[in-house]
Image: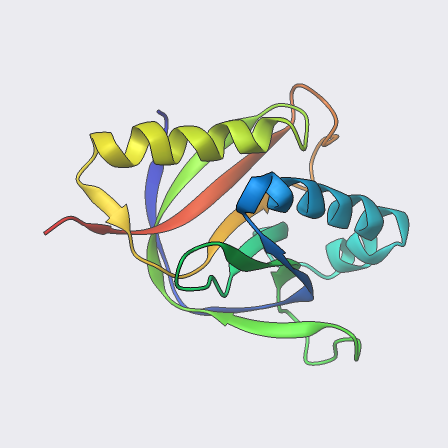
Amino acid sequence: MDYRIIEKDTFTVVGKSIRTTTIGGENHRKIAAFWVESNRNGFAEELARSCGSLGLLGICIDFDKEQDHLTYLIGAEKNSNQIPDDWEEKQIQAATWATFPVHGAMPDAMPKVWERIFSEWFPATGYEHAGGPEMEVYSSDGDPSSEDYYCEIWIPITMVR
């Protein structure tokens, strides 16, 4: 699999979130519906106008101990002290990240790469998940429904000891 390793300092994100479960693939359905609603009601557009250099983010955070439940935040890097009252603020700790390219129409292209990361990449490398948030980094260039659309998955990693 194609990937890059990068270092990123602690940063703050703002946005809105939902709580979901991975049981029975509910997370795929609920997250896709959350994006549809965020695009429909103008939230994603408002967020995109004020996002930092990474663009729009889909962040999986606050996993439970069994990894069955998580919070999914649609957000962006905070770049203003003034945020709407109904937006949340979260801090993403400094980490070493493995970043994976995702090519193709959303939302279909994203789960395929997630599956390959955990079924192929982790077992074949000397890395393990470092815990903490996982991010989908969406480019503001291009049409997310296009087969040529490009975005990335970022996973915090550490070397297996």
